[in-house]
Amino acid sequence: RSSPPRGDAMALAVAAAVAEAAAAAAKVVKKSKWDDDGSGGAGVPDWLKDLVPKPKEGPKPPPGVPADRFKIIKLEGLQVRALIGKGGETVKDIRARSGADVKIDHVPQDPIGTVTIVGDVEKTEAMIKEALMMKGCPLG
Image (cartoon, rainbow, N blue to C red):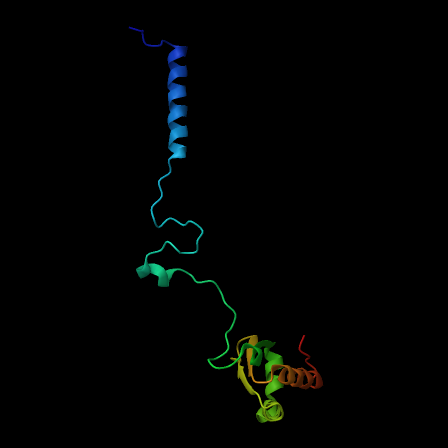
């Protein structure tokens, strides 16, 4: 029989055994099937999928409207007010001349509003830029 290590030899043996156990533990890392693997929720059970954040997508046109006939423009509050005009006359004129559906969404307290164009986007956007330029708050 061999005799157990004594003094320094015993400390070295214990240190080697601890290092070996730590290395083995580092190699074996158990993950559950729900651990994030970077797939964006692909491994999430069906009953939890509605809680996983979805990637941001740009605005989509309404059903039946081609993407080239739909655009959303962000405007500052001052520009929104200028685009609407006194009693809505400016936006009504743009709607009539362009034939496009122009919708404005702006809460007076918000610094930014949105203008949704459905129709001839290029023509309508040019009219909006011209109207804002004439009123001294150009679209940048």
